[in-house]
Length: 161
Image 1: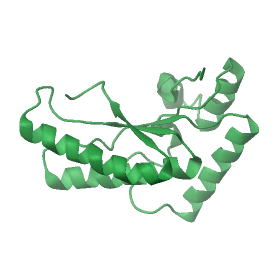
Image 2: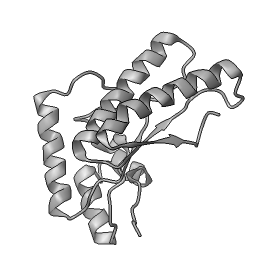
Image 3: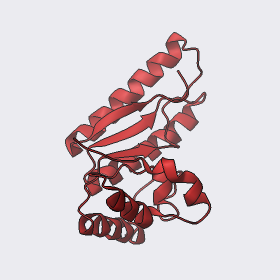
């Protein structure tokens, strides 16, 4: 059995400056977790949630640093919870920007060796057919991009349709 705590559970500690990704890893080890399930907010400021495009050398070094700390603590990466890259937005340009962010987070998850990545659908609570089609197309696209990296795409279900 795998045991983890999503780092979003500590978002108030993160906002108060009492935790970062390194403290999260140490806390998980101390609590007996068997894997890490961070929220992308814990990877900021080096990897801002709204970032897109290729990673900088400094960001690549940061990923290596957190990978080393996770390895030293004996904890593999499980699920990466991604906010800020949801599929549905009203305009095509906003959807495109979110898709670029989703691609970036998929690439980051692949580099670190995550098993799963969780991305919101977005959209209104009521689900008209045209919105549903956009969401289905979006998830199909993300699944195709994630599959060669060995990643499963998980649908977030706490807002939207």
